[in-house]
Image (cartoon, rainbow, N blue to C red; front, top):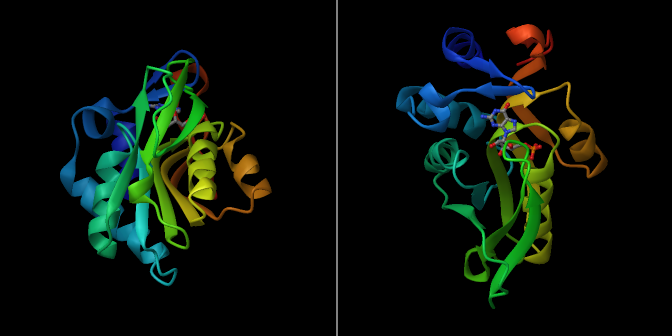
Length: 193
Ligand code: 5GP
């Protein structure tokens, strides 16, 4: 997606540890027009998939997921991150390793918001090693819902997330693929869409 690529080139900053900082349009300040366009693009790609619900994870997945859900005319649910490890009832919960904080967190979704048989589209901001997506897939599986696919805005294709999702047989759509962040330079994959 050209507009997203250009935004990354104009405003993205490469941090140590292969992290791309995009807080001026996605992770803190949000470019609403760009999010709208992103919502339309994913809605188009998954138009024939009878999506019942969009599932994301707080906090950075929420903005794009909301726009996708709006375009598809379905609800959006986001998994909450929780520090306390106390078990509550009536939630689906998984332990998740966060790439950016390098910490484990518990992620929960109330059982009322995912129903057996629902067709779920996962939306997140980044795909790195696939831990967030894998956690959401576990939650979907516990709910006996159906994971139709994953849409990410930015895929870091030099990390292992896509392989993990291919193994799990989950269709993965990314708007931009980055093949390297070495020396502070963003290099896009030639086959990025
Ligand atoms: P994964 O779980 O695939 O290893 O990492 C994806 C999650 O970590 C996303 O939800 C995203 O919030 C965060 N993340 C991974 N890499 C980056 C990055 O380069 N920049 C930012 N801003 N977040 C990232």
